[in-house]
Amino acid sequence: MTTDAIDCFAIVAPGLESFALAEAQALGLDAKLEEGGFAWTGDARSALLANAGLRIASRVLVRLASFEARSFAELERHARKVGWPRVLKAGDSVRFRVTCKKSRLYHSDAVAQRLADAVTRVVPGVRAHGGSVTEDEVVDDDTALIVVRVMRDRVTVSADSSGALLHRRGYRQATAKAPLRETIAAAMLAASGWDDSSPLVDPLCGSGTIPIEAAMRARRLAPGAHRTFAMERWPTVPRTLGAEVRSGLAERALPAADAIIIGSDRDAGAITAATSNADRAGVTDDVRWAERSLSAARFPDSGKGWVVTNPPYGVRVGDADRVRDLWAQLGNVLRDRASGWTVALLSPDAALERQLKIPLRVVATTSNGGIPVRVMIGQVPA
Image (tube, rainbow, N blue to C red; front, side, top):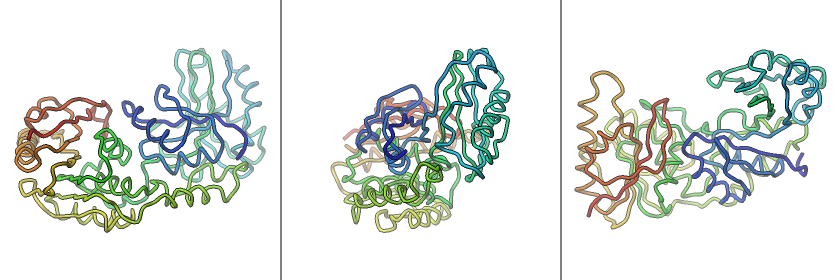
């Protein structure tokens, strides 16, 4: 599979596709935007490069087959022709995630069972589990995942090349309240237009995801440098290829960040978590951490800088007044100490944005922890 052309698709959280595409193209992938992510034709090396090097994408799929099926008989006939041996071997365990829309085959569990039967016929010794797992169900790291989409009677069969979702970099073992997913933090940094060298401050840093992602980006540290991927177990992928790709990405890394990166939070436990997470990410010396209330937030004496942060939303009953006051305080602090700086944040509510008294524009709409949010960018008035 290393030289054979394969069709790849990177899944991206809705609303963040354009930022992820730009990142993929900078990585050297000839990718094109599609609904829900972006696609490219490459080889196994390119798929591993995407898994190890992309900061915003959630998962990378490799297409195995696409065909029309209006009956289970058609499905079974085509399923036996799918190139299962490319990604599965005797002894492997496999699960299926099936979605059916506007198709004669509408029962996802029944589709999964037919595919499981086909796999065990084509690759004896594979343990194929019938029934479709949902998006929320965690598939064991040692179990292969086949993603099947049935749309208007067209069946697309893809193998998950990633394994654990790509936001799981491996560094965040300690968390504060409501941790921000790493891929969303990376998208916020991309959307903000940060230049990787100007000062960057998160005065509400929690367990440190935004400053850590900023430091990794500034140092060109690959987000997947310390993990392996499902496709490294495929029979057609050489055992050494993943290590070769990670080694190549490591050669691009810089010894230190050029930027001053600061993360502060009033919660001592959050700063302890952030410090240990930064150590695991390999950016201990690249971020300055401080246990500090928002009212005491500090910003480098610079005419140009970025504030990238994820303020609390107040989704629990009784939080609304406290959170509204905090957003107003954030606006006061920024206008007083960070005039002329760029600010980027996640917002669930225009009413909270107005508390800042800073002109903002929407650059993306997505969700964080199941809450619809907007990525807002603006400049603090001078």
